[in-house]
Length: 181
Ligand SMILES: [Zn+2]
Image 1 (tube, rainbow, N blue to C red):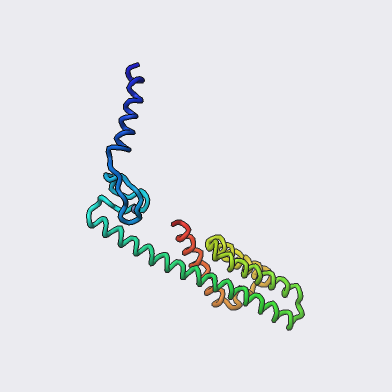
Image 2: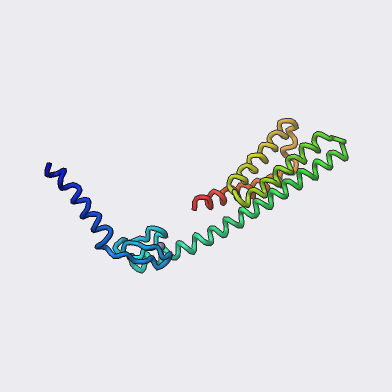
C-alpha cells in the first residue's frame, strides 16, 4: 500500500526535475530548444555540451556529408542523362530497323521502350531511387530478352551497354545513399 501510494509522488518529482529545474537552452547550430545538461542536440546532434574535439568532429562530418550529397546528386544526374540516351538509342534503332527491314512491330516496341525510359527519366527527378532502379531492371530485361531471341545481340555494342549499365548502377547506388538521409 505504501509502495502504491508513493509511486505517483515519485513520478511527479521526476516530472518536476525534468521540466522545471533543468534550464533549457537553444542549440547554437539549429536553434532547437534543448535541455542544458544534455550533451547532444536532440534535433541535429550537435555536441552543445561536448568538448572542442567533438565539436570539430561534428563540423567535419557535416562538410563531408555535404560533399557526399553533392557527389551523389552528380551521379544521379548522369544516370538521368543515360536514360535519355537509352530512349534515343531505342528510338533510332527502331527507326533504322523499320526502314531497312520494314519491321513495324520492332518499331512500335522500340518506340514504347523509348517512351518508358523518357518517363522514368522525368520521374527520377522526384523519386530517383525507384525510377533509376526500375530503369536498370528494365534495361537488363531488354538485353536478356534480346539475347534469348538472338544470342549474338548480347555482344552487339557491348561497350555501350557496359557504359550505360555502369552509369545506371552508380546512379541507383547514389540515390539509395541519398534516400537514407
Ligand atoms: Zn541542433
